[in-house]
Image (cartoon, rainbow, N blue to C red; front, side, top):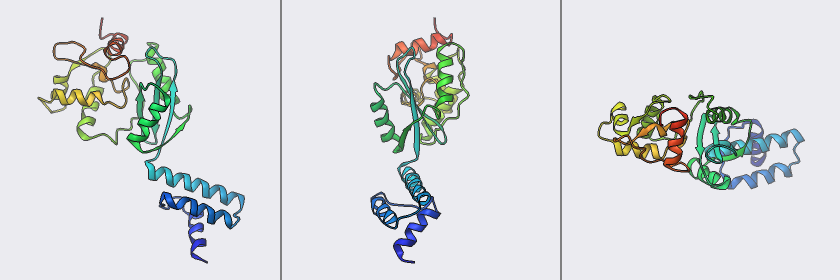
Length: 226
């Protein structure tokens, strides 16, 4: 068997084979020049898509909840769980940000994000105060992950100061760093960064659409603000 035929056969037999992106066109040309059977051609294409997705950082499935009290909210999930909730101004802005952050291919899929979308809709309607959703926090730095896991332990209806949260995660004196970590929370609302307040009990800041007005509305919804 010639070298090119061996390489093509490897694609048919092993979907985990590593590739270089600039070799894909050549590989497909060689494969289809050999007139493969229809089923084999489909398998080659599937293997190419899988290998490219793995090289880029996997696949993110996304969709948008177009009508919420805060405007459109975008959702992205990976194979590990919920990766992002976005207040982006447009779908293209969200896709650009996701690709830059995760270097993943993005595929719109209502079914893949249905569980997250349904729980968020229940939350906005006042029928849910906690979420049962697997989260993908694998790309976060250890400190930010600790902060976000700490704020998740603050239940709906309660708040915590940035300084108190710093102490709870064993980093006393790092209130400002805690605030920055919360400000770059990739999964707002579900990871409730809005429950952290300034030391004097004021709202502090909020990076989502609408700023502190949105933060206040979320706390009112949860019964933590009048």
